[in-house]
Structures are given as structure tokens and as C-alpha cells.
Amino acid sequence: MSPAHAVSPFAWMRVNLFSTPINSALTLLILAMLAWLVPKAGGWLIWDAVWGPKPASACDAVRGEGACWAVVWDKIRFMLFGVYPFDEQWRAAIAAVLLTSLLVISAIRSFWRKRLIAIWAVGIVLSFWLMGGGLGLTPVPAERWGGLSVTLILAIFGIGFAFPLGVLLALGRRSKLPVIRAVSVLYIEIVRGVPLITVLFMASIMFALFMPEGLRVEQLLRAQVAIILFIAAYLAEAVRGGLQAVPRGQYEAAEALGLSYWRTMGLIVLPQALKISIPPIVNIFISVFKDTSLVVIIGIYDFAYAVKKSVETDISWKKYFIEAFLFSIVVYWIYCYAMSRYSQWLEREFARGERR
Picture 1 (cartoon, one colour):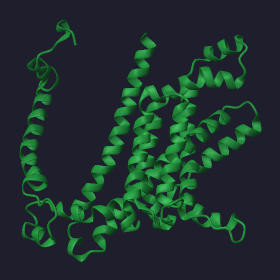
Picture 2: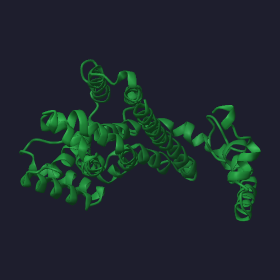
Picture 3: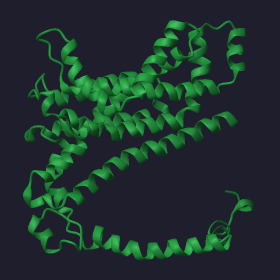
Picture 4: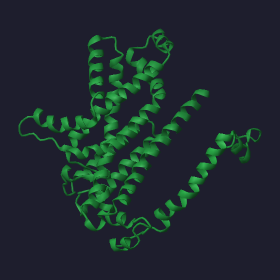
């Protein structure tokens, strides 16, 4: 900010916090509440809490006065990896780091090239090789997968495969061909009209009915397909909103240049539509990451369920379930907040590009 536009802290406070008597009263009330709440919360969460590798008896001595973070220390491996074989959990840890790294790399603009496809292909192969085994590693069936790795797999691959399907559905809904438009509208409205739990149940049951006799589909794969099909319908509506916001003149200019339908969409219309649709698309991504916890209803050990079972099955730690769930809240918040901040940065970058 230039010196001419700089605002002193006191001037900012006077304008934003004490501009009217009502604002002043609300500001003072909130400050009083924070002055009362922060010391108490800080004492329970940090200063009076039990940290490190300590037994449950150490937490029992200060129960009610401070949090028992020793439960996280004791149960961290079960929380992060679920029922994955204990001696092989290093593989699940590397897979989780690898999947997170793919997200970080994809967020860097210098990697927005064709090589990113190759990076993702290698990352996917390595992730499933680590989790499933084979080729030198002990095989681990998908039923034993669990924890944060499963949550990341369901969310990342759910979003990755649902996004192109959602774009095709959005284009189909705006198609001039009645059959394609009707099929797209029917699919979108039916899927958006039922909860994800219903779709997961149907996938868990119906897959077995449609498969040839003797062919068994893993429960994790069923859940993954259900999530992809469910998210695609919501992404289609978000993209369709962006398509409607693109000025009609853009289509006419493409027609004047003699561009085909797919070149018009790929080079002119879709880039603008997706830029407009960033906020709702990111909201869907965040919802997907959190809604993966619903797969527990079909017996999959996702991260949230692993955290729950880690304390539920141990009598000595069962009373400290609040601390365990607070830990899961922090993990979910880190991923969701990172997505939110990245979307805001992306919007600013695109806006800066338009002004150049």
C-alpha cells in the first residue's frame, strides 16, 4: 500500500470498530467475551493439558482441568492408518504424503503443463502400489486400508474423475440435441435429488447384482464410483452457471473465426466459464473431502471413523474422545482451509491477468 493510501491503526479502528454507538457496544462486548474465553480455552487446550507419551492415569489426575493430548500420541497410528497392518503402515504414510504432494504440485502454476499429467500418472501408480502391495511388497487387500490415506484416495480421485464428467454433463445440458440434453438433465436432477448415503448404499448393493457371477468388486472401488457419479452432478451445475455467464459475443466471435464446437468450448468458452465457477467448484471440493466420512456406513475405515474407533475400543482412553475428535477437526480444517485459500489466490491471479 502506498503512503498516500496508508491508514493508521487508530483510524482503521475508528472506522471499522467504533463508527457508531451500536458498533462500539458490540466491539466492547466481543472483546469482553474474548477476554473471558481465551484464557480458559488456552488453559484447557495448552497450558494445563497433558502432552506426550503418558498413560491414561496421568490424564485422569487432571481430568476437567486440561485436555489429554496423550490420547493422540498413543492412538495416532490407528487414527491415521486404521486397520492397515501395523508393520506396513510406513507404506500408507508415504502414500498419504505422496497424494498430498500431488495436490501441492498441481497448485503451482509452473507445473500447469502436459508434464503434470505424467506426474499424476506416476503418483497414482506409486500410491496404489504402496497401498496394495505386489512387486516386492506384501499384498494388503483393500479391506485393510483405512485412515487418512483412504480419505485422500476417495476425495482426490473422486474429484479428479468427477470433474471431466461434470463438464461433459454441463455441456450436454446446454446441447441443442434433445436426446443428449434430456439424458443430461435426467441424470443431474436424479442424482442431486438423493443424498450421498443413498448413492453409497446403492453402489454397495447394486454393483454385486450387475457384475458377472464370480466377479467381485472391492468395497472401496464401489464407494469411489458412487462418489464420482454423485459429485459429477453437482459440478455440472456449477460449470453450467459459469457457461451461462459467458457473454454471447464470445460464441459469436468463435463462429466468425470458423472454429468448431469443441475448439470453441476448449479454447474460448470453458476457460472463462471455469474461471467464473471457481468459488462454487471449490465449495464442492471441500464438501467432498468432508463427506468421505459417510463411507463408514458401508464398512470402510476412513479417517473420521478410524479416529472414533481408536478411542471407542479402548476403555482406558474412551473418556477422552473429545480430544481425539478435536485432532480430527484440525486435520480436516488444514486441508479445507488450504483449498479455500488457494481458490482465493487463484481468483486474484486470474483477475490480475485480465487487468494486464
